[in-house]
Image (cartoon, rainbow, N blue to C red; front, side, top):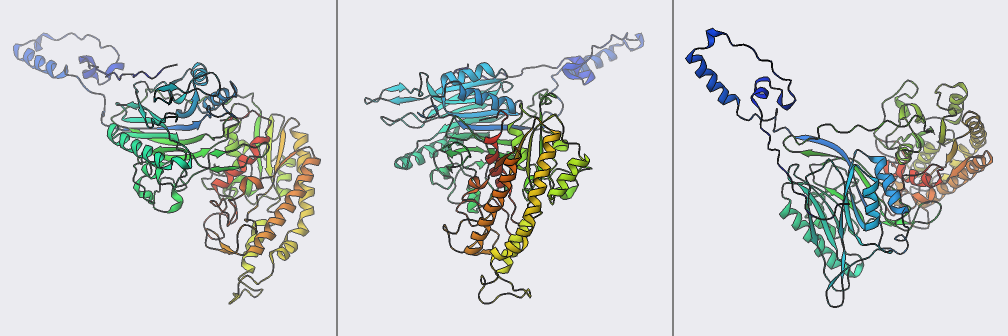
Length: 636
């Protein structure tokens, strides 16, 4: 593994021969044939003209259009491996093995991973197992009582520190390490940077001091990072990842956020997983992002309640997507982003490697179901196909697409063939598709099937809309004034609309599972329940949800109770037919309508499907399902 010595950039220094200048073919030209010169041209004047021409033509000729910028789309990542933790630091080879799988699954598009709390032996393993990547390790020290720095160990016999994993075609990086803290008794907080003069690009990893008692120290460290980047890398494109040990709205992190974010931000960077994306503005919600730190209980994921890990980029970098995945061997979640970086003056890899095709022998993953499965309401929809028309609203943000990216290498998934969920689908629609082989998506090559179904049969989303309207409008559709909230109870509406249809849904689900079992006998089948859309009544009074709609306390309780009852019945059928049932409710806690955190559902008013999961909600769905898969996961 490479240590922290500097790697000097080397200039091109090429000259362009006469033959290249004559043909315009540059260094890849074909050899020129000698052509005899006619005697008539061999005069003193002709010789002089040819001599002058040769002087001009032999001057170095630059490549075609040297000033043209080049953009490259890549993945970047940030991960705290928790090597300094008693609970997670002692996992031995399991932690680096999981990270190797994760990097290989994203290669070659993955360009950089910034790492905190890594262990030297873990990073050596990464270096051995990832032939297309380099690993730059920066050890951390701790001052003794006399102020002398001592190497900081991991929770096993290995040195502790930060690192950057980077693709080998980025070959001219120069390394610089910055010390952020030297207080006696504290581990040295550092920033490690790799800078490329030719690409005007710098990638840094930083680890700030933790704890409420060190808030002022953390703010000072963040401000030092801001000043160093401005001084040493002015004009560079910046990628900065790190465990910053603070929430997005803190004063310390104002040193990172571009001033356009507001909230006293005075930095120069953009957060890749901000809900506002590239549309930076002063709304409070823009300084936000997925939680990345918390405990990892057994079974269903949950309990993640803090955001400590960040990926920042220069504002000119285009952010296409960002996502926090799950880790089994750290109390931090890896953060990944799909970005587009522009290099100046034609800096370009000669032939970007192509993504290898999936192995044809791998079992397939088929995603079936209704709008909650198709991702209606989550945006970024696939174009229609012959079998899946436009109204199916198959989103690239749907939970199945998140899962497919996590099981790559263990299962294969072609969205055109295997993503057959459709907004508006009812249980009988799915049953007919399977029986009549309209889609041809089920056979013995299938290894995993996920499905949520029944919501459209029960008219569930529209029932909730009726519940809201009943608080404001009477049977004659006239507004209830002056006391909204005194109309028909949501519980009564649910009993009239939903309950009479539930028996038929359960019967159809049983038939669907039996058909899947006959056609794909080797497949693991997962039936996914419906998330609880409303915040519980014991946490808040009447509220106004994000779309500006008043939601009474009693209505929220009725919706929650009905959701639990529906899921209980779906679970009974699934388990009776040998399928696994996933209850998504714990993953959505705090993110329901009127919840304490960001809302993972669309409101009643807006362009997207009312009361359906948004992009963040689909990720919440995926995090509920992933722990139940038999397939090996891309854990980190």
